[in-house]
Structures are given as structure tokens and as C-alpha cells.
Image (cartoon, rainbow, N blue to C red; front, side, top):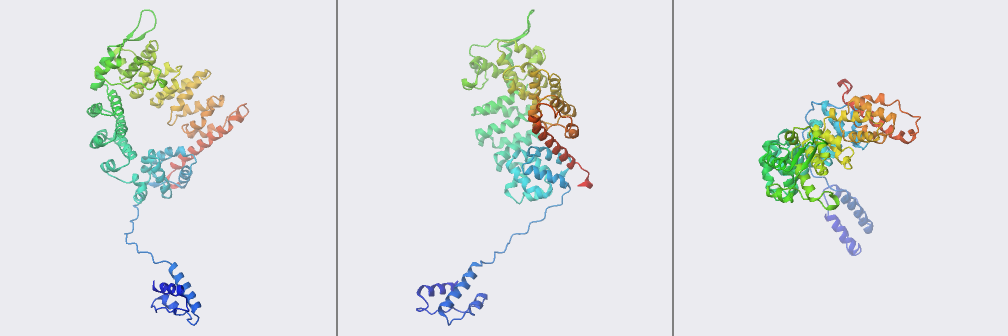
Length: 504
């Protein structure tokens, strides 16, 4: 800017040595500078400097935005959740009752409603951090949510993308979620997609991707898994063995069952209890390897209490479908579990059966193992098997344990079974648990966790009848109040979501 340069030049040498005179300008700045009285040299220089400095600091006109205006979001056909539901969502997004958000999203989806648009940014941000919520969020965000997600790269997970493009360009978490989804709806497509990049994936990713094949594993997966048996990664080979073990008629399973039949037998003596007898070769690992079967190496001695032979037996048993023993010996799971309990190889057989049952999720075997291991030191770790039972069978086990709650072991057993029942409880179970707590304090510590699964429709019934005059009430009253608070929130949450349209 020329006036500023003239001012600086004059200021450097002084007005006594250089006449201060500005060239005329035809703009607003020139009009202002022309009004300065030049008879006072120093005064005119300082005034001009102030005017020009202010002019310079005022900035410049912003550049014109040449981008086309965004088109408005499409009209949403889905009903907008009402104000009460929006308030519940806002509380959960702020951290209050945060664990209930998946339940809220699922209920909103069942009701065919969408998230109020003012909460979409915060919800989409949450989905970016918590990948497990993404599909649930997408299901209830509506067309406005689709439009909004397209405006921010951080929310790209919620946009419509071709599966092939997502597989090739998505993050590791996005690819795992895609594979998990496809294994649920179209297992063959998931397998074909993984095959396109299998040779370029890292061993870590090959392992993680192959583990998703446990969802909907079928005989059509056998060729792919057979190839993975020869993978250079130990972990990939381990996953492939587990998958093939899930297929009772796979070549791998048939071969392993044939080997096992040579060393295991069910014996029922005339006097005494039935037992499983094991005749192992001197070096079972070398024997298995010579027969084309690889097993995992044992962990360091500090975390493994089994000897080399016992470890090999456990590994072998864990890779055989549990129903094979029912068919081979014509015995029930309970009879086999009882016979294993009498064997000198009890620990190996039980641990192998547990691993195989966890994979196969056979309900008869789950109940049999839970029955015979309830007094076992490793039982707390094995209770996770109960999570694979149907809600009806699991609740029957819990109700049986609660009816025997005068026995301390039965009370502990009931508590552990309840800890893995992570879906909505029936009214019968809800009443049995809460009434049990009201009578004695055995399960009080777990009440806050129970509040997530107890039937919220029974809140009014559960809010009364507590033994406020008991000796333990002062110690447990806060836990009980927290339980009721959480249950009331769930009740109000569901009521708001399923209110009739005229109230929304």
C-alpha cells in the first residue's frame, strides 16, 4: 500500500528533512487523507499514520464462496421420537445411565422411530468412538442423519458405501464390522470378499478376520479353512482348526475323531461307577503330528498345571464336537460328564469338554458341565458357558438355584448364573430375584447390574416392600435406591418410545 510506504519513509528521516506529501487517491481512504491539515508537518504525519493503520487493520473483504449450496435433507418418513425420548437420549449422551443406550437404540428401532435431529451430531460422534453402536445408530438416524453424516468425514461410517469399496478402503474396525455383518446375512459373500485380499493381509488381520467365520460357519467354508490350516501364522492355523472342528463332517473332524476313538473308551464295571479310560501313546504330540494334526503348545509352566500328556489330551478333546461322544458311546452328556469326573484324566477331559462345548454351544452339554463343575476351583471361569443357553433354559437353572438359596453354594451359583444372563428377564425371574433380595442380602451387591435386565414394567411392584427396619438396611439402602432409579429410568424410557403418535 503506497500511502503506508510514504508515511514510513518520512518517519525514518523526519519531517524536517523530507516533506510529507501523499499522492491523491480516488477511493474512500484517499478522501479521508485529503482532509488532513498539512500545515502541521508532525501532526499531519501522525494523523495520516493513524488513519492508514486503522484502515490496514480493518482487513479485507472475504473471498466469495464459489461452492454450490448444499441440498436440503430429504423428508423423513419415519416418525420423530418425542421430546421425552429426546431428553432421555440427551441424559445418556451426557453420561447419565450411559449403559442403557444400546437398549434405547434397539427399542427406538423396533418402534420404527428416528432420533430427534438436534441430537444427531453428538450421537454420530459417539458412534465414531464406539464401533459396537454404529449399526444401531444407522438404523435410527433417518434420512436427515444420512444427509448429515455425508457432510463430515468423521461420520463416514454412517454413509452408504459399496461393500467392496468399504472392504478395500475402510479402517480395520470398519472391515471387521462389515465382515461380521456379512457373515450374519450372507456368509458366502463375506468369504468371497476376504479371499480377494487374503494374501495381502497381515497375520494379525488374517487371524481377526478368520475368527468372524465362527458366525454362520458351514460346510461351504471348509475349503477356505483347509487352506488356512497351512498358513504361515500359528494363530491363523489355530483359528482354522477351531472352525473345522465346528463342522462335524469336515475331513479334519472325521480324522480327529478316528484318532480319538483309538485312545478313549467308556467303561462301566459290574461294581462301581462308570469312567472314561484313556490310553495315550508315550509322546502324544509326536503321534498327533505324525497323523497330520497340529495342537497348540502349552503356555509357560506358571500358568499351566497340566503335564505334557495331559495337555495334549485336553487339546485333542477340545477339537472334537461334543456330540461325537454321545453318538459313539450312546450316552447322555450328563452320563459322560459323570464318567469323566471319575477318570484319572479328569482335569484334561473336563477342560477339553468345556472348550469344545463353548464352541459347539450344545445346551445339554452346557447343563451337564455346569452341574458337575459347580464345586470345581476353576468353576467361576467356566460359568460363561451358561451365556450360550437359551433364555428359557438359563432361567430354569437360575430359578432352581434360587429355590435352594438356603444353601450357600446354591446362592453363589445363582449369582454367577445371573451375571451371564445379559438379556431381558421374564417377569417370573424378575420377581424371584427381587423377592430373594428383599428376604435376605445375598444378592444386594449385584442389584445395580440386575436393574438393566429386570422387567421395568414391574417397577411399582418392586418399589415397595423393602425391609427398611432390618439391620442391614442402612448399609444397602443406597444400592437399592440406585437400583430403583435405574429401573424407573428404563420404565420411563420405554413408555416414551412407545407412546402413541398423537403424543409425540
